[in-house]
Image 1 (cartoon, helix red, strand yellow):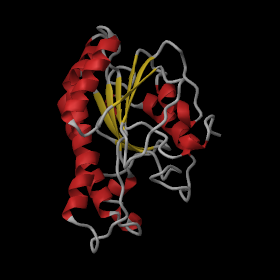
Image 2 (image 1 turned 180 degrees about the vertical axis):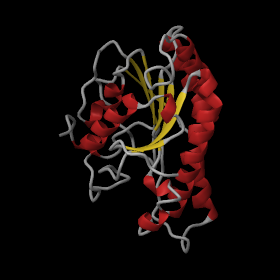
Image 3 (image 1 turned 30 degrees about the horizontal axis):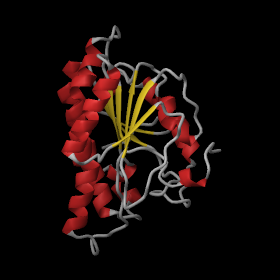
Length: 258
């Protein structure tokens, strides 16, 4: 059950979530989905963008919320600068790329503009964000006493979808969503490339399918309440380790084939 009134029921999650200084930090990201922050001292920056003219409201319980355009290099650079200031010499433990756009288009109706727009938001944005925050993630990893890789040490988590699984296309193609599924398949490739590239820096990278969730994108016809998806992800992320970097997981803790 949501703690917040109806205006929060639309676009409920920020496009980019950054967390530092606690292995329980994810609770603050999910504050507007019914989970209370674990500690008022957490350093949390939730990066949000305005989509299609909508004004996003944010929970006052999230310690620090800043707004940025998750596909604009200059905006991301400014966000990085402001985050670095707030961290005051510390590193950044976790980046969750949650930005995404969806259009219900088929091969008969999709056009180049639609494909390029989806690719820019769903793939290029997360790539730029990873590049921009890499120095802060490296700093967190270098300053950690933990061995191996984990989300509490330093990690990039890309929110993907089972529709991006090439192996699962036959069973999911009842909803073609061509631009969405193709761009998310590319995001999965990006995740693998990030995992291999950043492993030597001590940074874990993984993709997570949150399920078909009751949000603006998923609509209220979706079969998974936000709270249930949140609880699942909160359970999965702390279990990820070095052997899981570069993998694709569902909110329920099951691996998904590429």
